[in-house]
Image (cartoon, rainbow, N blue to C red; front, side, top):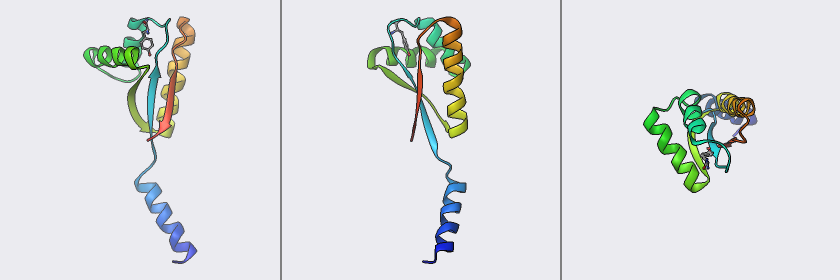
Length: 99
Ligand code: TYC
């Protein structure tokens, strides 16, 4: 296959399947459960019931999936969590990893 055809194929794949990134919240001993539920509702658009369930899952297993997004949106969510946590004085952290 020619190099230019290889680039064409690569471009098509990239355009049709932009990489997706999983965003996780991590457990810690200090962030309040209510604050995590609020973050899940306001940043990750969960219902109250979903937010409570994800928060408890994180509390028990040390991390929990909050959503899957394009790189830019995932990065924005991680930054939003960091800012809200800093403002509220909690050590809550979010991470992202390629799907
Ligand atoms: N472990 C925290 C507590 O007992 C609650 C918590 C849940 C913290 C989820 C962070 O991502 C988190 N207060």
